[in-house]
Image (cartoon, rainbow, N blue to C red; front, side, top):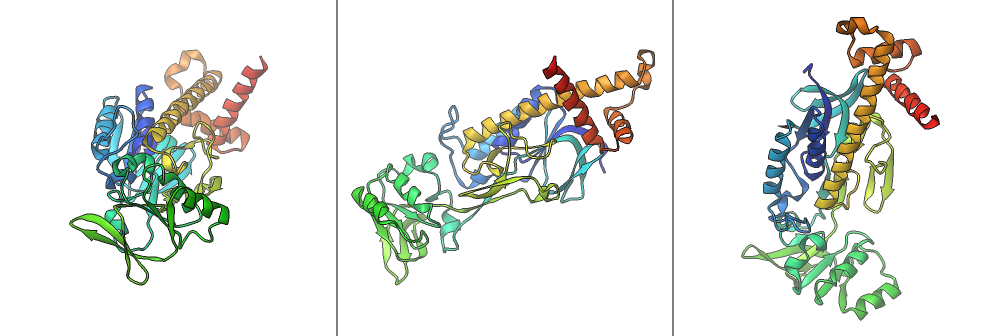
Length: 357
């Protein structure tokens, strides 16, 4: 077990995680980023809608980001997190190689996994001409023959949206369920054709998508397909905490407050792990917010612990002052609470006095 304690461990080295790391590094915090090496947008050759980085290679962008945070003393390690648990001094993170690391706070920024429809060709073309976000990829396929492959009733909205980028759109509705007559009329009014036949496979020629084969064998000519994957949050390592979740059209995701704080006082979350529809700029913003607020939370704790230490130990014995963890442990023994709960009780009481004054 590693004995060095980090101020903050960030799980996930994507846009959200590195943005949080940048804020914390600049705040002189001791920060470790654990990166599993599988960013969600690794399948795309370029990213779009990112002001100042329009058209940048996603992996090159992350490489530059790692260099930036390293300049502020942040350490980035390649590791897959197996489990996170609570200790008397904070949070323990266990990695799949047997490593054990402790920190005062944790930011979960490990994103989501895209589970695609089990249709031959989908996974192979993902991020190239099988797409999900028109704001990320619509310009590049504007005016082309576009298909929308529904995977749920939400596909109806996607079909309406994609029409903005082309007037040649076919909507494959087999998995969308019944299409309301009013919606059908709206689609027809905008020349979005509907095809109810199930899709059998994607047709590729010379390393380019050329069509969609439907049940019965007919091939519908298309240049690109938009679809919605099933989004699976990569947060199983937090299972022990039973954190509050929220259900949405995308699934069940961690519930956070506007600063990114979860229902556990030491754990924050940022990026797609809590906001599945967030693109790179939104994830950067969420990471920056979480990083700044985690530092503010640590500042509050630092002052509370210092005050508790000063009350317990006279000024002329400063060399015998205990660590923050020891103060928390001593307080917990007196109150019958856990160490972390004792620290937060002190912080809450201090905050209450400030509000009352």
